[in-house]
Image (cartoon, rainbow, N blue to C red; front, side, top):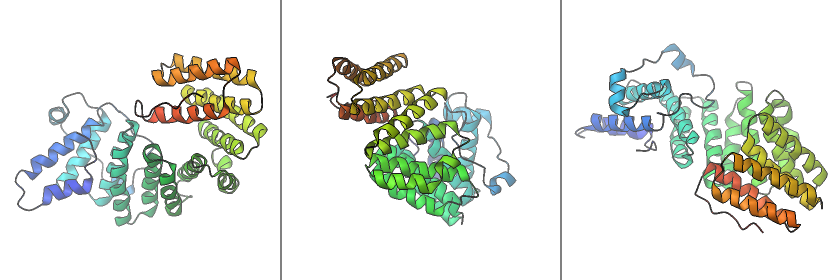
Length: 342
């Protein structure tokens, strides 16, 4: 059972008058929360715990009770999530605690690529943070909602959510989160083809300085910059940025993303008439995808591109389309058809 049933819906189920068996039904939904937490020992970058939670240490539930819910050995994260949800069911959890653990659950869903479910839950999380009076945390929930919306519903829907998030964030309270939000806006603009506004954001946001101590974040920024300069027709500058992004991603252990950035670099090389370089980059990307055992439709499409590049007939536009397809394939395996490699 999925976790799109929100905290508010659980509470309504428990406290609805005259509903026989409401407690048992709610606990059944609590057990469904564990379904998405069983195989994840750590949650994703939630930042500091709210002060209220620090003052009230979380009590872990009895292992035997949890085993009855989950039917397997549970990670510490699953125990904590189950305990927090159980406290909400009993009516002892605050709105702030409910929002925090709902945000955790949404992050677990996002790690499982269940973006639509995470988005539904984050809508309630954002509202609960607002009700608790913490607009910064509401903005944090919107950042995640915007990023997951881009993954599931497209950049044109994500862009206004991310802009709303930035308006709520306290940059001094969490500078890396503000940088992450600005990077998300930049990526959404690039995916929407808004290259001029994206270039203006690059200059105004201070992202390079904000990410100076984050090599992977800086590599992702350089990847976005390369696509901006390509869109604006500055191919030499695009090639430099994409080359640095590809190397930075590889150095950071992100082989898949480095190979996709290599496809973007290959497209720039082909646009500049450097067919030999473009063919070599495509061949290297294909070798990486084969080593990583990427889904067959991804490997096959890149193989056809590499063959076309070897013959001198590869189209830069086709390479760019395949690059975007491979990004979507990583987020939604098996759910998107491959574009034609020509």
